Length: 329
Image (tube, rainbow, N blue to C red; front, top):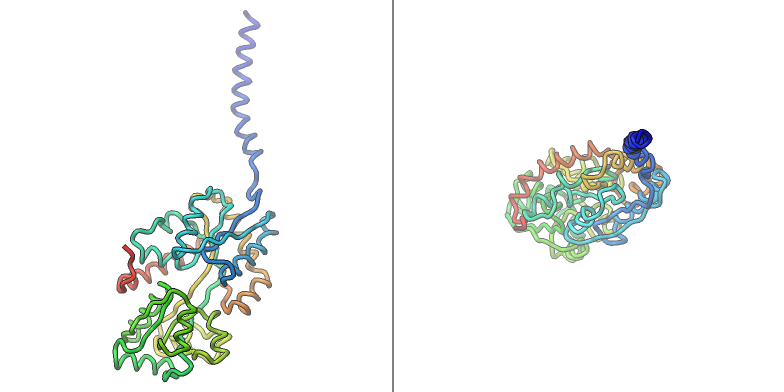
C-alpha cells in the first residue's frame, strides 16, 4: 500500500510536470512565420498595372520572407470579391491583399450593403505607390487649357461633358466641379478604354485618366493634357501644370496601392510582413519600375501610418460621396 501511495503521488507529480511542460514544448515546436508560401491576392485581372507591380513586390519580398510567394487574381465587384476571398481564408498572415482607395475608402461610402467593414475587418500593412491623374481632352477639342475648359463649363452649365469609369474619379470630378464653381455633364463608363475611345472621337469633352495609361495617348497626340491632379507636376509631363497651379489651390487627387491582411492576423505575423514588404520596396528594381514603367511615385508607409492616411481620405470623401447619385442600396 505504501508503494502504491508513492506511485500515485509520483503519478500526480509527473502529470503536473507534464501539464506544465507541454505548452512550452508546443510553443517551441510551433513553426515560425512564415513556414510555407505566402499568397498575394490582386482584385484585378492578370496583366493590369496593379497586378504587374504586385508580382514584382512579391518576387522581391521572397528572400526577405524566406519563403516562396505567389499571386492570385480575384477581379470583380470593385474589389469586393477579393476582400471576401481574403476574409474567408485563415487569418494566419499567409494571405495578403492588394489594397486601394476602392476597397478601403470608396466602397464603404457608396455601398450601404457592403459585406465587410474595412476599419474592423482589414489591417493595413504597407503602402507601395501612388499616382496622380491627368485631366485630358481630345486632340481636336477647342479647350487648350484648364481655364478654358472651366470657363466654358461655368458659362453654360452641364454642356461640358466629364467622363469617368470609377467611383474614385467620379468623386475627383465632383471635387473639381465644386472647387471651380461649375457643373459638368457627367457621363459614366465601365472601362478606361471606352473613355479613351470617346475622348479621341470627340464624343466626350473631358476625363480624368490614370497618368500611366494616359502617357502613350498623350505622346501619340491622341489626347491633350490640361492639368495633373498631384500637388506637384509630374516628371513625365513637366510642361503640364497642376490643377492647383491652374486656379484650384487646394485640389489634389491620388490613387494609391498598398497591402493589407485580415484584422485577426497575429501582430507578430503582420509585423513580419510589413518589414519584408518595406525592404522589398526599398530596392532599386522596384523604384525604377514604379517611376519609369508605371509613371507613378514610390509611396511607402508602414501599417500604422497607412491606417491614418486611409482615415483621413475617408473623412475627406464622405461628404462628397453623398452629393452624387452613386450610393448602391
